[in-house]
Image 1 (tube, rainbow, N blue to C red):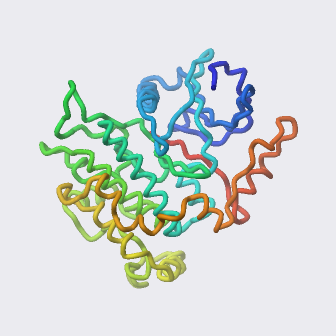
Image 2: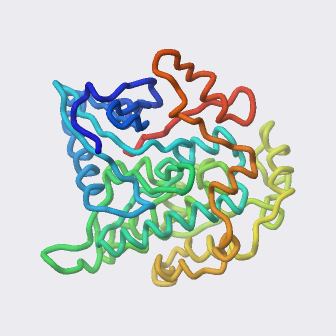
Image 3: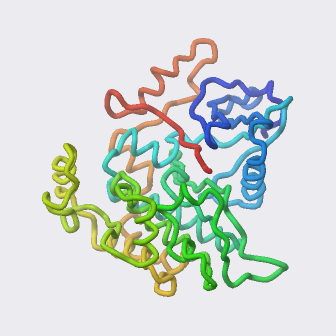
Length: 354
C-alpha cells in the first residue's frame, strides 16, 4: 500500500526530533491513499556508527506482527536520507500524553488498559524469543484504540543456533538512559545473567511512571540507583496514593512538595493494581511471574468491559480528524490545540528510542 517514492509523501509538519536529534519525525500524508502517517527521516552520514541500531530496530519490527507491537509500513533511502514510514500514533508516546493531559499520572482505568496492551505485546515478544530491554513510558505509543510497544533498538534474542539460550549477560547498549527501568539482574553483570523476566521488572517501573507522572528513582543519583537495585534499600518505587504517600515531613523540601502530596493523598489505587506492581517489581527474578501468568491477574478484570478509546472520551480527549485537513490551508497550530485539555499544553512525539 505504501511505496518507496518520497515524492508521494507530503511532509506537513515536524512533530519531534528522535535518536539524539539525529532524526526528525514528520506528520505526513501519502498522496495515492490520502492516509496520514508518521515519517522518520535520518541523514545517513550523521548516523555514522549509530546506523547499526537504527537498522537493527527495522529488522526486529519486520519480524513482528502483533497489534500491540509498533510496526512500520516501509523504509527506503532517497539521496542521502533514510526514511521510515510508520502508522501515525495520534497521542504520541505515553510520556507525551502525560505531559499534555495527565501530569500526575494516568487514572487507573486508562493505566490498566495500557498495561494490558503492553503485556499482550510482551507475551508475543517473549514467545518469539526476544527480550525488549528498554520498556518505559516514552517507548509506549497510543492511538485511538490501543497502546503499542516501540523502542526496539536494544531488543535482543535469547535464541541462538536453533536453541534457547538459558541466560543473557551483556549490558544493553545505551543502558545509562534506561537505568531507572532496568532490572537488578541486568545491572548485576554476574554469571547468573538475566532472562525475559527482566522485562517484567521494567514493566513494573513503567507502571509506577504511568501512575505517578514521574519516572521511578527520579530524585536520586545514578550511583544510588545502582546500589538500591543491587542491594535493596529504602528508595523503593511505589504507586503514590493515600495508602503510600509520605508524610509532609518526609517529602522533598521544595515548593511543589505540599501540593503534590495533597494530590497524591486524595486518590487511591485498587489493591489489585498495588499487588500487580509489587509482584512485577520483585528483586528476585525467581519470585517474579512471567508475562503469560500476569495476563490472568485480577487487576485486568477491572477493565474487562472498557478500552482506551472509551476512557479517553470520558476525559473529553479527542483526536484531530487528519483527513479533514486540507493541504492548501492547513492550520496545524489550531488543529493540534484540539488535543490539549488546558492552555499552555503542547503536543510532542517522543521518539527518543536510544
